[in-house]
Amino acid sequence: MVKKRKGTFKRAGKRLLIGASIGGLGGALIGYFHDSNQKLPLSQKELTEILLVSLRILFVIAFVLSIFYIVQVLQAYKDYQKSTDDESEELYRTMNKRHSYAVIYAGVSGVSAALSVILAYKLIFADSYAELFFPILDFLAAMASGALQTYVLKVYNRIRNLNMPLVPTLKELKNNVMQMDEAELEANYKISFEIVMNLSGIILPGIYLALFLLSLALQKVELTGLMVAAVIHLYIMGMQFKMTKAYYK
Image (cartoon, rainbow, N blue to C red; front, side):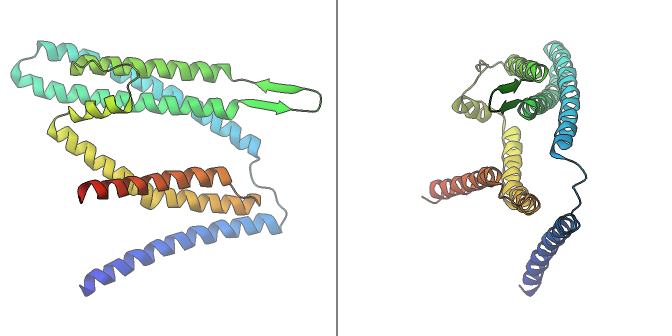
């Protein structure tokens, strides 16, 4: 019991030390630039341009990789249909593994394209005119990513022998998940639990700290970011309350 308490205090102390170190370093940098009247290394415009270039490169890489894995899935599906019972299980696992990679990379390409559209889109109002800049190439990239994700779902229906709509509802997605075999369900449960724990215990607190340091640097509260992070955090707490109520009837 004593050892367990010592371990708990040690972990808590370690987390506090890491948080204090990050906060201290961030505060020192903010104080340095504020007191010495020096500008930050990059302006907001330069930082936005760097992010846009990075996101566009990420989109191209993820888009190509998703197509690559989908081609492999289709080839594996042909082999699976011709396979014997001894070969079918291994081919089935390989086919679904590659399809999962295709889904992931298609999703990454979609996120990258959407962020590029948001960052590149500009609407400027002046006294006598209004100026609009719409990133057509980024928008076309987002449309291409959407088409790719639709095709990936179509391939999923084919290899799983399902009839799920191309734009499924949440209920239809849940029903599809429940049709997985026991091993797949267990893997999904484990990764879902890990995602929730990491979000609640590491990622969201890290976002709070980053927004706090950003507020100190810019001398204004990042209200939108704080509200988004808080809503996600409260949603997780609400779902845990729902789980407790449903399980302990």
